[in-house]
Length: 435
Image (tube, rainbow, N blue to C red):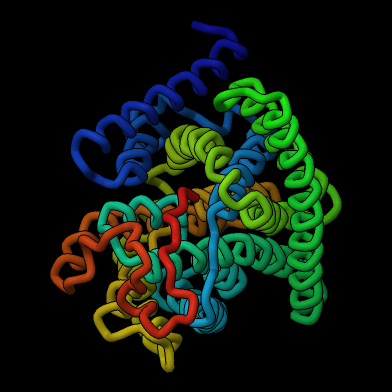
C-alpha cells in the first residue's frame, strides 16, 4: 500500500489521466466533453470504484480549485465582446430578469419539490443561477450559431457565474446565522462585486500595459516572427498577475476574486485587441487543462448516498428548473431582437458548469463542518442539476437548433449582420470565445 503522499499523488494522476481519456472519447464520439468528464468522475469516485477520493486532499484543495476556476473565468473574459446596443441590451435584460425570477423560482422548486429547507433552498437558487460558458461555448461552436446568439449565451454565463457565487456565499452565511438580515446580504453583495470588478479592471489595465511593452520590445528587437520566449514571458506575467489578483481579493473579501478575474480578462482583451488572440491561445489551453482535471475530481466527491435520497423529487426539481428558464427567457426577451425560435433555443441551452460544481463542493464542506444535516442533499441536488442540464442540453441542443433552422451559420460572416443582429448598428462579426 502506498503511503499518504503516494496516495495523494495517485489521486491527481488518476484525475488527469481519466480526464484526458474523457476528452479523447468526446473528440472521437462527438459527445459534449463535460458529459463524459462528469461520468468519469462518478465512475471513478465515491459513487463508483472509489479510486478518486478528493476528501483525502484536505483543505489544500479549496484554494487550488479557486485558482483554476479564476483561470477559466479570465479566459472567458479575455474574449468577451459586447459590441452593439442590441447585444448589450439583450444581455442586460436576460441577466436582470434571471437574477430575480431564477433565484425565486429555483429556491421554490428546491423547497417544495426537492424538500430542502428554505435557507438551503435559497442557496441552491443562487448557485443554479450560473450557466457555464465552458460548456456553452463548445456547444455554440458545434451548432455554428450566429455570433449574436453565441455572445448572448456566453455573456450570460460570464456575468452570472461570479454573481451567483458571491450571492450563494452570502445566503450561506445568512443560513448559518453569520449575517444579520437581507440588508447585510444586499450591501455585501454590492461591495464584493464592486471591489472585485474595480480591482480586476485596475489589474487588467496594468497587465495590459506591461504586455504591450513586452510586445513593443519584441518588435524593436526586429525578430522576424513570433518569439517563443516573449510569448512564454507574457503567459507567465499573466498567470502571476491573475493568481495574485484572485488570492488577494479572496483574502480581502471572500468570493470577490471571481468577478475580479472576469473583469481583468475583459480589460486585457479589449486593451490588447488583436494581440490578445495569441495570448488567449495559451490561456485557453491551460483553462481546458483545468477543466479536464477539475470536473472528474469534483464529480468524484459525489456519492449515491447524496443523490439517491433526492429520488423523483430531485429529478422533478431539475426538470422544473429547465422549464422555468423558458418562462424567464420569454419574459426577458420582450422587446429584444430575438424571434420565437431563437428564444426557444436560448431557453434550452442552460448547462451548469465548473463554477457551479466547485461552489457546491466547497459550500458542502462548510455546511458539514457546521453540522448542517442537509449539506449532502444540497450538493447532490446541484450535481444532479449539472448532470441533467449538461446531459440533456448537450445532447439535444444540436438537434433542436437544426430543427429550428438556427444551426450551420458561418462562424465569421464577412460584413453581414447575422440573424437577430440585423437591427444592430454594430453588427459586424463577433469572434467566438473559448471561455
